[in-house]
Length: 347
Image (cartoon, rainbow, N blue to C red; front, side, top):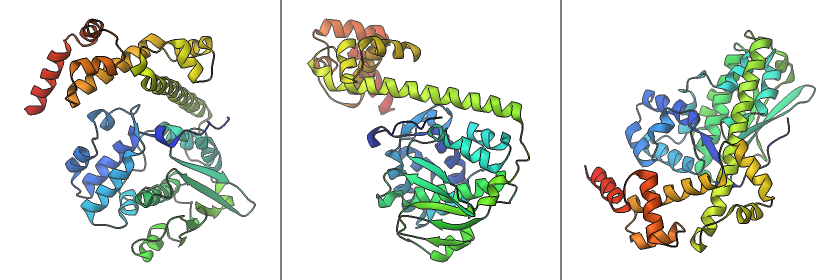
């Protein structure tokens, strides 16, 4: 399967599944979960819906807050030790139903986007010692050190679980500097841990790739891979809608964007864009209407912009046209919507 094209850092996202893993671990550690949810603006949907995504940039505030709350300079390492190893995610099933550890690892490489756009691994095999290179977006940002350590420690725990304890790391490398007790890393990983290396990686005996899976099942493997492909296709469709929305946002104040102009901005023929949007289960007019509706609701609820300015910012030429569209979208007039939101927020 070809690797997906790299995404811009501003559009990177993570699965809500990560939040759902971390939430009970924070509770187990006695952290102020409600404060984390409140200050990081974790929506109820992120705690329940595995199809939900959130901007990767939000993780930076999360890890900084977690270190402040815990006073633990190695909070990522310790949080990973409290995560549940199995949570019923499709990548887990791919691992478990593959013939051996190596096959599961190679398959999982193709579907890492289901978990995160920003945290990926790459298997580099050699005759005696193989490396799992860990690639992190924004790796130069010190605040993401906790994420890197959490990811590496969780992978070690997960690999040990799927191999029934056979997996042992020979060495762990991080590209960031050491912070905290070096001996704690030795304890957590059970091997030599190095810092300020060119790349982050788990090194291990290549023979471990042949470790058989006790849950290998060819029929289930085909089913799980089909499910993973469908989920990846859904993300790809969401990417297209997101790109269309970005172009709409850039041109909305100049008037109502049209399909032809947006397609040109995206470097494709309008017929191609129309077809791809249809494959995504939508069309241009629906994407445009949804974007304008959400923008209008956001401006009315969260700002003091005058209604006339909201009309302009959402690309309408006439207030009456905006009023009719907004009433159709929400069942309320703009003024009624703003009053209802403020009344709710004040309670």
